[in-house]
Length: 335
Ligand code: ASP
Image 1: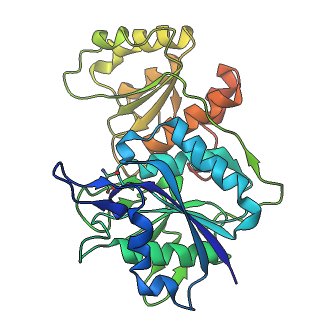
Image 2: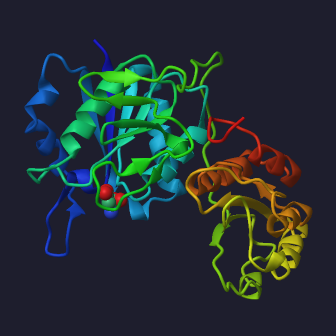
């Protein structure tokens, strides 16, 4: 009989109504699970629940909580066949991306899920999300960190929260679904990460000062010079389309050049969810590479942020980090 560890970190799925709106309540979640008969069916794998303390709205997740979840999984890795992490939807794609870098040679499924409607409500989407995630965690097809939501299994570091209120809340615009749950769970074997050869390795993250800037028409770049000091270790610049910045870059490029000389790693991602950054396709992007920025290609901003934390935590020098930002490590970008 397969055995799954469910880690409840907080988020809507286990929240209850309070006078200030939905909030997690310590100890409530176990009773909510006890009230779902299918979870105790003989067709379900055996599972155990670990409730994290304190329970969080995922807006409050930080590198510290990512490390705590990772440590818990690493410490119980040999005792379970798979892991389900119940998490708020708001930053689930960031946590999924971070876990994907923390673990190398992952041989067991780590499935993140949650819900848009709490289990305490009659129309909750949490029941299916939880039950199907447990079944996926007990199957032997997945060897990576993934995210299950609304019938879709996505690669964790390719996922992004797409809808604030829809029940299919996550998309993975640059990577196919890993599985679709209809009457049966249909896995897409071509898209799944292969079973690793080496032993599991874990690299906990440190909280480095990094940033994200989204460009917009009329942006006054000199204002950003004040945050681009030598203290800033890395920055993700969300550009238009395939990597374009306004004003032929005349205002931004000198700032980028200076930041790069100061030792900041600058990564270019696109504001378009689908497609890839190609620096040099247009005049408005060609100066970015010369100024020292690197391409995030088709990576999500969530994955780029997590990858920066990871590479800095590995202790590499800046040139190595720049090279590795452009290289596919865990399926987060095209090869
Ligand atoms: N604010 C909640 C959270 O991210 C939203 C949710 O879980 O859907 O924790």
